[in-house]
Image (cartoon, rainbow, N blue to C red; front, top):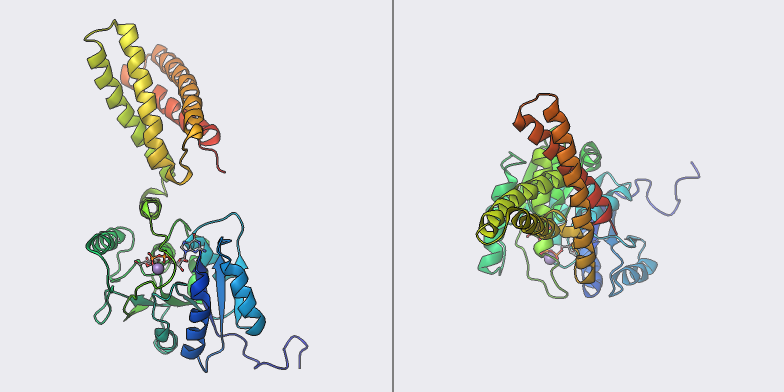
Length: 370
Ligand code: GDD
Ligand code: MN
């Protein structure tokens, strides 16, 4: 027998890895592991928590239980955040042929896991999705706002995943390693919606089935779903829709730039009522740059939003960058115009150079990655 085979365990190794993304879930660790143990009796399973260095000490708690139970493992990430990338890295840390994802907060029904596994095996499928919206499933005690938001997000998902899946937002599913590997190099990894990302990224459509479950209420800890999560979801959709042609951030930056033109002309018209043209034009320019800066800060760069003193410093750097951009714009446009191109070709060429310059330099100096 090969020395690589551990004599104490069966020769089959782990069959199912349950990946659990976690952030501040310390009180839910022990109950979940206990529930997984009962639900997965008779299956060779392991659980991998992927914890983003939770301040409450979730990772230490997982390792403590791992000392008593070798099925329990922890990947602790430092200086990183993100539900989707946590799930991806948990899967990459496993060697099991079957991979499941379940939330750390006991809101998903772990008792469904054995049926997910047997269905996945027997029906020759790629992925089984736990669904709150299939018949027999439910969202539990959600307030109207959250339910409406989930319904809208589900509709929007159809734009990028044209398959009849009732709950593409689900964070509870199980798939074959091969199905994960087909998609893994194309995943965007943004935000919360790893299932949607998988469906939108696989080169060959997944053969899937949904199994209903009831979304339970959270007992301990808090939900991390906030406006940033919503923004990241929209970025994911846009990325899948237009990402082949241009980076989503650049597209947003250009749209904000377009809104700046409207701000500029409106301000100019109003300022001309009481000021001379050069002065009115200066006011309009500053207003447009400021509004572009603020919009980019909450829209294009929401994930790196500047606040407080950094906001002021960012604004100043943005003014400086845009001023150089305006010089480049005028210079290029005039040069093109002198080559006897029509006025609009020249104007457009100048604007494109200006916006590319502004985008490239502000992404380095104004909203540099922390
Ligand atoms: N590692 C890591 N990093 N884990 C995270 C992060 C993060 O930045 N943010 C959240 N998590 C973990 C939480 O600890 C929890 O285990 C799980 O991801 C889901 O987060 P919740 O904050 O509980 O989200 P939710 O209950 O509002 O949303 C759930 O249901 C949605 C359906 O409405 C999630 O399953 C979503 O994926 C799902 O779409
Ligand atoms: Mn939750």
